[in-house]
Length: 113
Image (cartoon, rainbow, N blue to C red):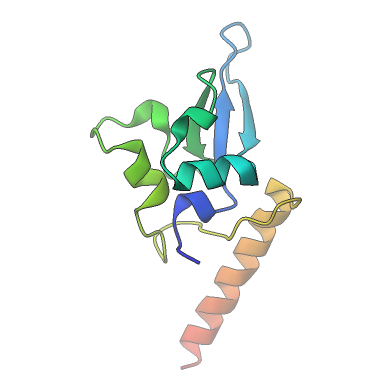
């Protein structure tokens, strides 16, 4: 599996409510992820913006002009952020804890070598 945002559990979409401040975040579902990897970003409604729910990047603040498809589908995230493989049905909180355990295990294994 490529370690890209489209395959990461923390790929999310954000819906801003002008009258409610921060807005609401959702995980991007498997059907949407499949469409994104094919370059079909129209599967994400205009009322949402894409973002990393671990705050590595956010479509709303893409000041450097990097195409969204490059961010989501091409940039290798291995050892560069909080990448954790998408597991449909797993909550954001549980995936965060599993990712943390995985990273701790990786660090311990690395220090023992």
